[in-house]
Image (tube, rainbow, N blue to C red):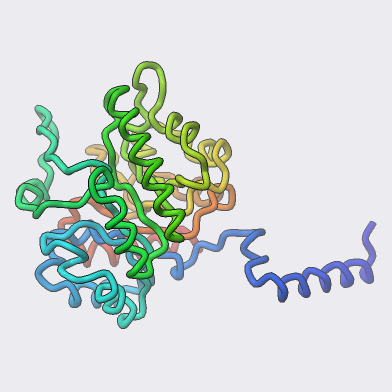
Length: 309
């Protein structure tokens, strides 16, 4: 049995080790606090381009500390150059952590009979040309690195057929190598399709097995993974430390459409209990088609504080 003297000796050594390695405490537990809370700006798509700085100011006022950007009706980074956008975010007391880019050129999906209407559909039809990893990898990598963000995220890439997957693997491999050279972490964001079998295999499993973890990590969208029936904690156990980012999103029980965090069916408690295994560092709240973005983000922030308390 360890006596008091040995205990003090060991904990003293640990304290010294902690001084030598400032992040030592993080190796033992992932603390999910408001310092980790960020916003995926796709949530604010219906309002942000009308007043970019004003919208970001409102987000900061709620208490969010981190930003993940997406495409904009203004083009570029909400009508700005990377460094300019990063400065606006920084001046409001937040940090620009990640940027989303399409894996292949964007095309509006054909509406499915009986499917709910996408509230952003008409706006998306008017989008200016968007860059993609297929055509613009190096340019986007250079821009994001210039702006000081840490992560470049593939928002989506075709995975419906074996040919899709083969082409997408090549694109993701190339992007991962470019990001590594630039000092960025390359990350893939899922929907449900990655967990639907194509010729007997899950696209997600193909990506994890064919591309090394030093080139490709994942931003798990907790809502879409839940909708796909994924055992999320088990997924973390199978691929430990490969999920530095989460999309914290909830789903309405009846419609399975996005709602405020904590008001739907996603089991955040069990997911966050496995945060150490996942290796998560940043939580980006997203609500696709948010009807009242600032109010919705306010509710989600308050609920997420309670969930992680």
